[in-house]
Length: 264
Ligand code: DGL
Image (tube, protein in one colour):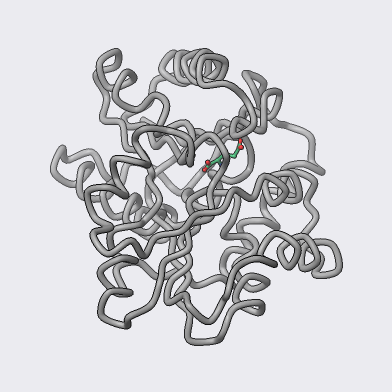
């Protein structure tokens, strides 16, 4: 059976890419809810309905595990989804814990980039409250990066001015780690790296999520029943046109050149 990956858009591919490194002999369904992206700018109630529709669809295809490759969807629905389905469901959260541990040692601060909805959610506030005892975690919503990624817009001349403007009130020297708390953001890792001092670590939860997926499938003896084949879906429709499929392939190749750290 296939492993399901779900996101509001192409961000989830940054997590799928990590999984393909660890589980190359499995098959995948990648579902992007492109009709409703961006989730981060909608209400919790609206997004919850879209998530359940998408996961129902994937469950009907038959999947052996599901990765909610979206920080926003994880914070809204992962607990409720686990109540409803009996296959393992993994989520992704902003990697605040390893960032705080490393920055406390370096006497630096942590900057979390995520969507507006993720940053508003109780799950994020509880996470920060439980770890950030010295008040070193700051956060910034960057919805523009979600839109750039969906538009396949990765050029410096478009993205750099947006980031510079949004970061204009931050003293970048204070930060030791930037947490990419939205799965659309790793596409911009190189650009972000170019804006911050070079010793800053840039991390995302995707590496940890892929490792957990492998651990779970190993424990259930459900690994290695495929060939790395991926079926792509957009909001309930199979993607078959050659141009979109070739763009997806290019995104996965682009991610080969990005090196995200976890637990630095
Ligand atoms: N990729 C998603 C995340 O990780 C959300 C982007 C959006 O739809 O706003 O949060």
